[in-house]
Amino acid sequence: MPRLTAMALVLVIIACSSQASSPTPSAIGVPAPSVTTVTATVAPTSTREIPHLPALQPNPFFDRVQISIDVEKRPGQPWEATAFAVTRPAVDEAYRLRVANAFGVTGDGIVGAAPDGTGPWRVWFDTKGTVALNEGTGDVLFFGPNTDDGPGPSGPAMHDPAQEQIKLISQLGAAAQFDYTLFYEFHGGDATASIERLVDGSWLIAGTRTTVALFPQYSTRDRQNGTTIYGSDELALFTSRGRLAELVHRPIAGIAARAIYDLKTTMLYGEAVEALKSAPNRYLRLLSVLPDEPLALRIDPANIVHGHAWSGAPQGELTHAADTLVPVWTFFASGTTASGKPVSAMFTVDAVRPEYRTLPASNARNITADSLLRTQLAVNLGGHRPGLMNVDEALRDELAGLACASGTYTVSKTDPDTATASVTCSPSLHLSLTMRRAFPGYEHSIWYLSELRK
Image 1: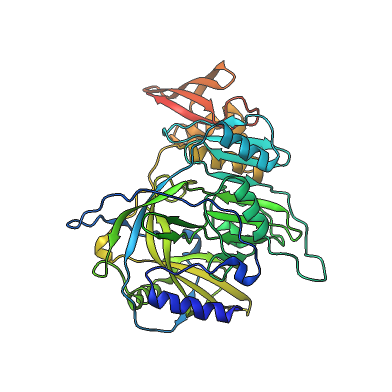
Image 2: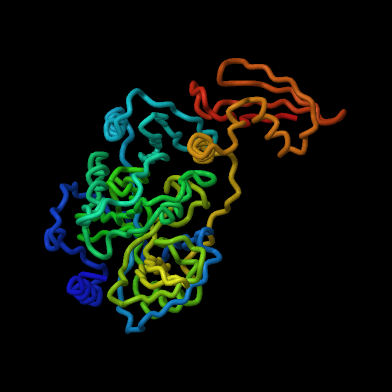
């Protein structure tokens, strides 16, 4: 990879500090964006009892890929790890207007149901693309399923699309800082975007788009520390001509120290390496190609940094509202696939020792605001299960799940967005169901089972 001088400098910094310092963007010819400094109050910590953190969860998308890793060993450096508490931006009229203006959509959008009591999603179903805003966390999703300009034009290389991504998320009011270095962005193809499971089924045909994952940096002024988040908080998909096809924006308004983990409770470099080598699939987070053939990867110690990642919520959540920002070792790797294709990868390994970790949360969940949005997007974007837009077909789908597919029923609408059904499954089993539109007032909304009584 380029920037050998910068890499060498980062290695020196890693060896001498508890967190990898961020190189100045202007040092490599990129103007530093205008950013807001995040301030926060340090949460009290206990010196007698160390809070346990949720362990990192593997991504099922990478379960079966075969990975061989070559990594150089070196002495580990003592370091102090911090678990952070996070605050989100206030979602008010000004914030909603900012989001709508950033994507050129009009009106108030449509607020979806939130049967689990969490923040509902406000969605603009527009010809320019679909925009979704979470009313509780401020998360923003954008989808332009038909946006693809084909192969890039010949001639000089175009500018890095990450520049356009930073402009957009700055317009959305991001408080994060971004640097253009080896460690703070990750590039891949369409397959890289697909690791962030936002829509049930495939909605993007294979194309020539580029995925950019930016790693946002946050700081706390009172402790003169902070973190870089290594994940998909700021992920975008661009066409060959720089047009936006997808965006994931998960904003943070502030961070505060939640707990401090000293040398006795943290994993040293050598221990993190052994954990990675023993279960690389578990720790793989980003991959530049489809995981459909074996990978041979090499990790250089200069490409290893301290940072944070999200863990704790059940798989499939669209926000990080139930997640914890946990300290991790981050490994960047490069190599080839079995057929010789170049490949880049990023791994995150838990930075606290196993005895200070808790088991992942259960995946058993009822219908949520997230699951309703994901299904609606699958219908709108991918054409999957269009029958869910019809209350009768949605009802029959629910009855099949209740082992009552052959039952008889009658349906009556109490209003355009609500329907009740009386069902006879057997002479001794009668059901009363209430079906509702997931996005009231939207003609193409899916229907879902809201209430069930026997």
